Length: 180
Image 1: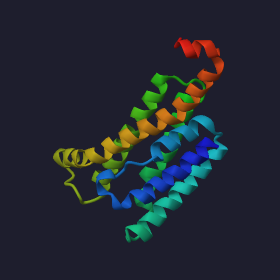
Image 2: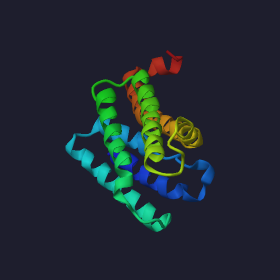
Image 3: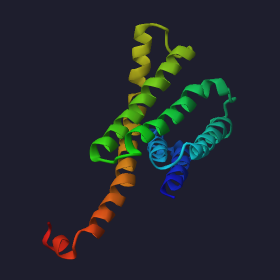
Image 4: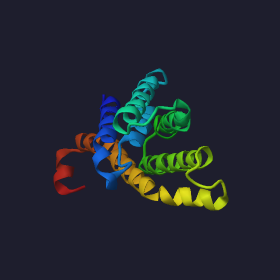
C-alpha cells in the first residue's frame, strides 16, 4: 500500500512543482521507484513504469507544450527500471540505515549522470567537447541537489517511520518511559 501511495505522491510532486522553479526536481520519483523495487514483485513494477511514462507524456505535451519524442525519454525510462532494480538489490532482503543511505545517494546520482550525459550526447544544447559535458553537468547541479534532498527525506520517512513504530511496539512500556 505504501508503495502505491508513494507512486501517487511522485506523480503529484512532478505536477505540483511546475510553478515553483526553485524547487525543480524536488520530487518523490526516485524514492518511490526505489521503495517500489524494495517492496513489490517484478510483475508489479510495470505499474510505476507505465504511470511515470504516462506522466512524462502528459507533462511534455500538455504542461510544457512540446512535441513528444519518445526516443528522448529512453534514458529516463531505463533509469526508472534501474531505480527499481536498485531498490530490489539494496533493500528487499535487508533494510538498514546504511542501505537506505546508499539508495538515497545512488538513485539521484545515477539519474544525474545518465540524464545529463543523454542531454549532452543527444542534443545541441552543449558543445560535444569535454568542456561542453562539464558545462552540462554543472548546469544540472541544482536539479541534482533537489533530487538528492527529496529522495533522502522520502526514503528516510518511508523506511524509518515503520521501523520506529515496530521498535516502539516491541519494547516494553517501561523501557520507553525510562528512555532505554
